[in-house]
Amino acid sequence: MAYVSMGEAHRRITEYLNRFCGAVSYQDSPMLCRLLSFSSNSPSLLSLADALNVFQDASILIRQSDKFSEYGEILAHLFRSLQSYRFGNLVEAYLAFEKFANAFVQEFRNWESAWALEALYVVCYEIRILAEKADKELTSNGKSPEKLKAAGSLLMKVFGVLADPYLVFFFFKLYGKGPKRVGALYVTCQLFKTYFKLGTVNLCRSVIRSIETARIFDYEEFPRRDKVTYMYYTGRLEVFNENFPAADTKLSYALQHCNPKRERNIRMILKYLIPVKLSLGIIPKDELLQKYNLHEYMNVVQALRKGDLRLLRHALQEHEDRFLRSGVYLVLEKLELQVYQRLMKKIYIIQKLSDPARAHQLKLEVIAKALRWLEIDMDLDEVECIMTILIYKNLVKGYLAHKSKVVVLSKQDPFPKLNGKPVGS
Image 1: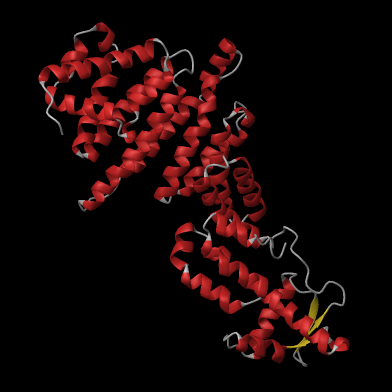
Image 2 (image 1 turned 45 degrees about the vertical axis):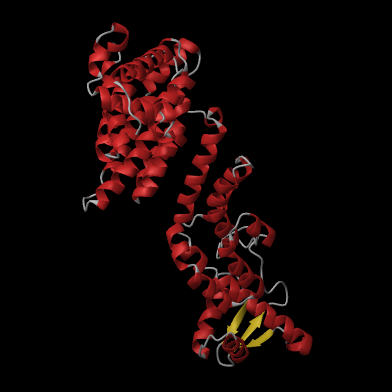
C-alpha cells in the first residue's frame, strides 16, 4: 500500500463524493455502477480505500456539505464496507455493505424512474459475492457460514420492491409501463444462484410462481441476458425433478439464446442439457463434446451407441464426483435401461444374420453370455427381471416366455425409439 498524505486522502474522498452525488443528480447509471463495483478491484476504488484508512473519519467530509449529507447514511456504510474490504476483513465488509444496500434500496424506491436499475443490479451482485467471501472467512475461522443466507433475505426484499404491484401500478399510470419491474428477473437469477449455492433450491418455487403467474410481468419485456439465466436455472430444477421434456425446453431455450461468444456459459448449459437429451434418446455428436471440453460425457455417449454396459459403469465411476456435484449422476445412471436396449438390438441383429427364421426369439442364456463377455455376471433370473423391465418401459416390444426362458420379440419395430420422450412415457 503506497503512502498517502492527509491532503491527498482528503482530495480522493471528496472527489468520490462529488462523483457519487453527480451520478445521482444527473442520473448517470454507468458512473454509479463503477462507483459501487467492489469486486472489480478497480484502481480508483482501491485508492479510495487507502485514502479512507488514512483519513479515518470520512463522515466529517460527508457532513460538511448538504449535497453529501443528503446521502450520508448510504455513503457512511459504503465507506466502512470499502475500508474493511481493503483490509481483508470480509465479514465486517459484508455487514457494512448490507446496511448500505438496505439504505440504497430505500432510496431507489423513492426515485421516480428506473434510471438506477443497473446500479441496483450491481448492489445485488456485490452483496451475493461479498456474502460468499465472508462465509469462506467464517468457515476458515471455524464459525458457521451465515452471510449468504442473509444476502438471500436481502435479495428477496429487493425482489419485493421490484414486484410490488402498487409500485408497478403507479409507474404504469405515470409512464404507461412499469419500468422498474423488468429488474425483477435479474434479482430472481441472483436469488437462484444464492439458493443453489446454499442447497435450498426448494425456495426457488415461490419466486418462480411470482414470475410465471403474476399478471404484472410480461416475460417478453425482460432482457435476453436475464431470460437465458432464468431458463438455465429453471431447467436445472426440472432436471432434479426428472421432468425431462420441460428441462429440454428450458435448457434448449437457454442454449439457443446464449451469446455464442460466451463459451463458458454454453458449457454450463450443456452440462445439464446433454444428460437430458440422452434421457430422451437423443445422442450428441462427438464434435460438440470436444468443442466445449465435455470429455466426461464421451464414454457415456459411446456406451449408449454400442450397448456397452461395462463402459457406462466405468464412465460413471471415473467421473462420479463431478456428476454428483452437478446433480446429474442419478440421471445418467438411469441410462442403463437404454444401454440394455441397444445390447438386445445388437444380439437381435447378429442372430438375424445367422438364423433369420428365429431372429425374434432371444434366449436368456444368450443375453447372459453377452453380459458375461462385458464382465457383468448375471444369473438367468436377473436377466429375466431386466427383460421384464425393458418390456414394461416399452423399450422392447414383445413378451417373456418364462418356461422356455426366451424373449419373444415383436416382428414389427421390436426396439421402439424414444423420439424425444422419456423412458416409460
